[in-house]
Image (cartoon, rainbow, N blue to C red; front, top):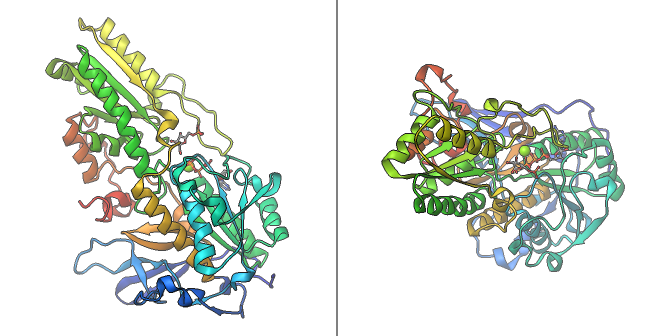
Length: 478
Ligand SMILES: Nc1ncnc2c1ncn2[C@@H]1O[C@H](COP(=O)(O)OP(=O)(O)OP(=O)(O)O)[C@@H](O)[C@H]1O
Ligand SMILES: O=P(O)(O)OC[C@H]1O[C@](O)(CO)[C@@H](O)[C@@H]1O
Ligand SMILES: [Mg+2]
């Protein structure tokens, strides 16, 4: 169904209220297709929900972005609370949904696919759900697969994505042509920051064409670099799996004299995996991340610290995120992957080499170094129990929002509540570890590593820049 849409780029829907309250609302199909037929939500007749008090989310329910406030502070930015609405804008028989997974693998992708299919089927009676094969390019260059609860049963126990995924290949016109030609009216797009940027331009094109199509993002990434949300699904599982590599490094290091266990972990631009794996392990003596510059030689440098730790303890464990210290490598790479992400040099191998050279040439100390790079092993696994529950809630929230006619949003957890976040808030920046925050101080005090920084080197981050993992008082109460 098409209508006479206004061609201009949609403006953010900012709704002010008393006391400095601001709702950063998400678009609705009614914004550009007036007079849409409205239906009663079929959930009201679903026996599973018959005893739930106030099952439907109140139209005015919103969730604050910041929950730590002062008594005089303004009420601040809020997002629309996710969940089922009393009225829906799709008749179940008319829904033709599709699901696509893009970017790299992440534990939980299959769980989200499963729960979107089952949510649509069991909660709303929707029978037509297509899986798009192989990421964005699958819309126009690959086959599709029909999904139903039987097809997706049990897939949450498997790593990877049953739909396949890819980088690159985002051609907005071809993708929206495919959506239009196939009569798809709900598009569920699972992926990281790049994917959400792709979803945002698909939504804009859909809106420009005036199509009755809800475009919904579900944020995934083990790197946790998607802003605003508490954390991305798969992160927890990846951190848990990284413990196995750190444990092995510790066992090796403890077993030989002057032994260094060095572990490289994923994290291209953000060091969350390295930081959380370090904090969880307590066996790590030093954690290096892209957000915290370091140097090797001289007073206060890494070599001096390693030497001290070996003399004190006889062994040590180092964790380095793959994006750390890239500026120190002689040749920094200018190569990019198909999506435009920087392809990095192997900082783990480089650091191993530099440490070995330093101790053989500059000191009388004989060292042992055991290098472990678990690479894809931390993400090519099924999600753990906590991520599985998280994926289920994200997927169900995504479905409720699309059925209620919302579009152009990412389904995300903010301060422990499911919300709908407008795409522009998700795509405007990347989430990074804030090294002026207490959490980094906690890490420094747990490892006793040097900070490699002087207070004068630190440019104050604005309070709003702080990562939700630190700032929201939920995942990591300060
Ligand atoms: N600015 C953009 N506009 C349109 N499409 C984009 C944009 N950035 C990335 N994409 C598309 O999104 C898809 C996934 O992007 P990318 O490979 O960067 O992974 P991601 O979603 O960031 O996940 P991760 O980084 O966790 O692997 C690719 O198909 C890519 O072409
Ligand atoms: O080799 P691939 O599949 O492009 O993935 C590598 C990247 O994926 C990520 O894990 C993001 O999921 C980055 O940390 C890493 O650099
Ligand atoms: Mg990314």
